[in-house]
Image (tube, rainbow, N blue to C red; front, side):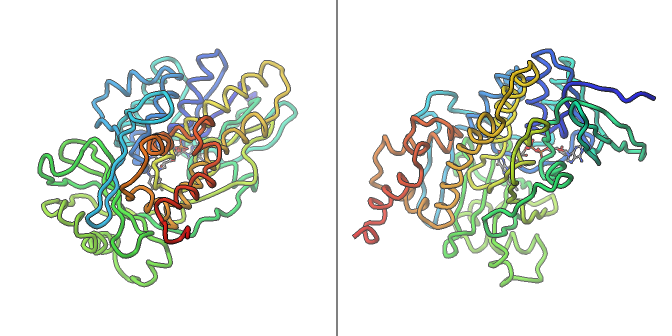
Length: 414
Ligand code: FAD
């Protein structure tokens, strides 16, 4: 049988893959998504940022998300002992959407793929990519179906949106270690039993462990009665608690954070606690004239600021804009046109993530004498607007963060 040849293959039908494929389909390219699993399937990453609504809009997928009845989100709240502070994403430096949703990913990802397929986007489930080799005109991919049968497919370009599957980084030896220490996540969905009004269900709640400030918990409301709940702990800290089950670890850690423990005092825990470790990853390069890595298939930083899906969708939008020019015959510079601009926003988040684990960002947000205009700049980044270079915290995040520390940590500045 002759090998079929199309314009673009997208590996993986998560948020990055479905946005990229829909954008290419809108522009009339022959694109196919090959997804290893069958949807709905579980995925981690439930709190969206307002910035990602812009990319859903661009792909024509915003309406379906807006009308799905997902839990509304307008900000992020942070608690540490008795201290509590929050950011309202509608009060921010950068123009653009200020609200979004918290979503069960099984349902969210299925909704997006259903909407894309209804338009005519070609998505094939139960097809795992196992090989990718260069040809004269692009790449030849091998896909393995559920029954073990193999098919080959030629294309001019590959977009790898395989998330933690990291298909091309593995096949093409692109992986490099992340600079972050290895951390683990323990998480589940909980019938929270929280009394109305005791907790702002319009925001993600991030609780810092009272003594060990690099340990933090998330509480993401998914409905009026259900939350996603999880904790992040470094391997180093976990070593001191070895031998316990994920259930015991999560409950033991929650018990050490009295304000969170009180909030969840009446909770029931119907679902086993899941564990994920070593999720921070990086690669040598994000793209060449044959392929581009999108979302988590490229770099994944850290879950603290819920930036994963926003970065994934941003990468899809930027990569497609570059790819369309190439497919039209223009010579494009993938480093200058895709990798650099994408990494600029990722690097903004990186400064914030470093400052979080170092404790500096926590000192900043819990400091009471904050200037409103500065809080709006921080709010913008937390809302996902990490590519707006008009924001001083995007243009020069390290210098800005250190300058703020002089207000919030006066004893260190003197
Ligand atoms: P994915 O959503 O992972 O999709 C990749 C798809 O590729 C999968 O469906 C997979 O089956 C498929 N695939 C894999 N291998 C193959 C193969 N060989 N062939 C074909 N298909 C394949 N992000 C947020 O925005 N908000 C959050 O609150 C948040 N919380 C997080 C908490 C934790 C603990 C962690 C670890 C991450 C969190 N994230 C969060 C990050 C988020 O999970 C990811 O950034 C996001 O899912 C990335 O989307 P993606 O499209 O790149 O990949």
